[in-house]
Amino acid sequence: GQNIDQPTEMTATEGAIVQINCTYQTSGFNGLFWYQQHAGEAPTFLSYNVLDGLEEKGRFSSFLSRSKGYSYLLLKELQMKDSASYLCAVRARPPGAGSYQLTFGKGTKLSVIP
Amino acid sequence: NAGVTQTPKFRVLKTGQSMTLLCAQDMNHEYMYWYRQDPGMGLRLIHYSVGEGTTAKGEVPDGYNVSRLKKQNFLLGLESAAPSQTSVYFCASSYRDRADTGELFFGEGSRLTVL
Image (cartoon, rainbow over all chains, first blue to last red; front, top):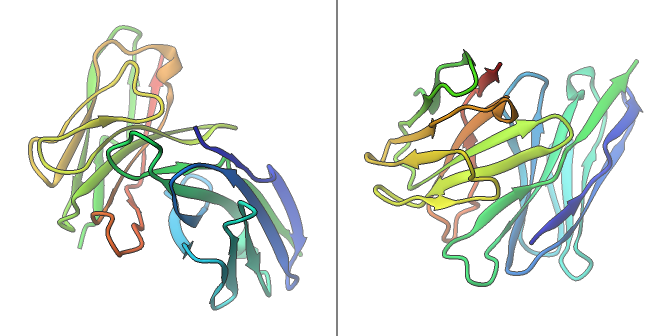
């Protein structure tokens, strides 16, 4: 099976930088995703990494190290609207599986305070 | 462009009742998924489909059945609802996993309470 770990909660100050870590153990790895989910709403796609390195998209960046089974989401210039849960998800095709499956971590609830 | 639409948005059932959640997508996606989300558990895959007429079990399939008779629709059925099935259900769809990113597009969710 797959094991995905991320912190349950984090708090950061408006205007600051926050890094949300995600570690995973899986076989047949085929990509790591970050999703944002505001309370009571559906998750929305933030980023995708399949190769090692940093992907930057505006205020958000995501990093992947496949050898370490590690990723982080970096949020810069935090705004109050960034208060949400951030979900790490791993896509993999386990041995014997017919197709890829996306497995989500439990999510990190980020609170941005003034 | 509606994207992914789930109906109903809210439903209250009594133990033992049956119901069907409907998911419809207008993006011509091959893949469709049903997830449930519970506090402290994250999103867990119930069933998924890689194309019309095909379905497969996910992580937590027990107590649920699904059907994909048309490419745009994916139905999730509860034959005999139990309180443990109280949850928020999300449908999602994506393009077939080839060279694309496999980004999932989610519906707004269906909140189900079983008394």
